[in-house]
Length: 175
Image (cartoon, rainbow, N blue to C red):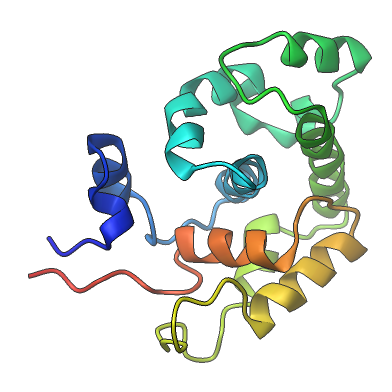
């Protein structure tokens, strides 16, 4: 299998690329998880986030927005004490805020997965020059999510999420 350089750095990253990265993710709960994890990744390596992913899933109730939306200050304190996850209070609070925004979307009858995929580029396989970190679509998605109450969803973070979820298709062709 052809892999980008970053995916050759470790067994964890190779497995992630081979089985998950860039493959379509459409379920609202899975899309929510990817948005949260991309937010936690900001300023860190993706391998750090992947290594902690099982602990994140446990700490954040399987990334169920309805459960996370009910988190209190006691939960923030619990998460800040959890060495299994990335203990960044801003990112933890952003996850709770985003869960509440996702619940509000669902209450309006809007599916988070469908909303994210509605920003798919006309040609999702088009290669931009160099290695872009954002696109007009990721900027538009970021603005829409922010308008709907999400935080920590800037255009660079959304570009990475869109690539990881297959909204933008940049997987290398297999041999």
